[in-house]
Figure 1 (cartoon, one colour):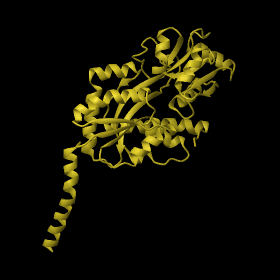
Figure 2: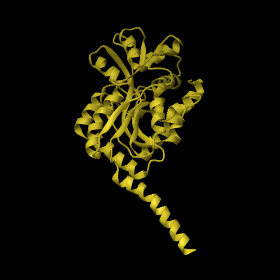
Figure 3: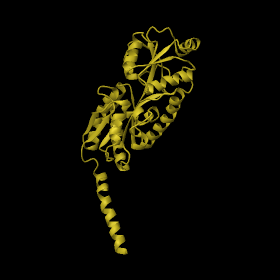
Length: 323
């Protein structure tokens, strides 16, 4: 009996040893970072700025790959189906890492169950803009007109189901107005139409809007975060402008397949944090209109849960469903 118990213990130890060894040796080969958006955007830029610093910290190359489509779901699913060994990361936003689970009628994976949070990377406010010659002095003036003439004002955003779309729905809800929401194929086209006066309002992001705002070609009414943006310190928040309780932001984060051992997640978190504390990385991230925001895995998990609950309510109220 004793011999059989000893044999079982020995067998279990033998099976566990390679896994422990792999964790202790991590990383022993290059790491793939899947960005769920096309090349050239702010997410891709931030990933490529971080990767060399992470590579140096980890002692292995971090290779950035782009796998866009379906609101980030294609790239995120590819990572969710990968081996949970820390060698495949997903770099994405609020949609693919959580909100899509309440937006899409059917999902090929569950971002909450199939992915494990590693760290928040950066946050970015949205900014409510209009043409430079907008007749509205401030948010209160445009709200007053919108209330007086429901359906008169149109508000462009970056596309159906994007966080900017949900932020626009929240604007209507908390402002108690009925602007006509106009979906565009990306934030750039919406911002361009506001710039040209083709649309009176747009819910833009800071990378798209800030250059035009600083040139005086776009009027910034307010930012959507609870605090003012470092990129636009003179622009009030919507809450400051009278829309009490309003808060919305874009964010990017890194996750790994569920089941990845905690020591590996911790090692990756340390490398991400080190990269986001690098002065050159900070400068480049801020130049892209975002603020470096490393967190613990637990803090990111809480943010995802909060976003799903908050935006899930909006999705239900407006009856929004994709696919």
